[in-house]
Length: 193
Image (tube, helix red, strand yellow):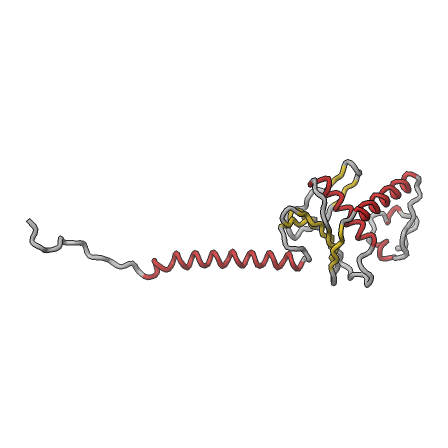
């Protein structure tokens, strides 16, 4: 029979406040660390002059191990862009130059180099970039990859192959500084430095 009294229950112990708050603080700390890492990586990408997107290729040691060059069998062309950034389905090549930008816009040779990377992306990734970026120390230029630019690039490649076949390649500038950094300086009879 019941007498109206409650059965004897063990005493209730309260948990220390630290055990309740600790998981919350740990989760908050992990979230803050994640936000900080994201912010630092985004800042590094912006300082490098890269557009928003995921870096999928890098020829600089600062981001990841060095990548294999891009290669086109059709055009017999090889190249290593500084960066390829994926923005959704688009791939944007980025060429970084340490010099200051010319006052009249990017150098023709830099635009053609960027166009060559666009051509390599067409074959390697089976998609045509809409544009690429030439980033100088002080300015950045978005260069549209048009049919006219593609045709100009193919004309230059054909002319270079013709010059090489006829041993008629001549120096195309009067700047000693360019000769100092040229990979063919040792074999060039026209070098300036």
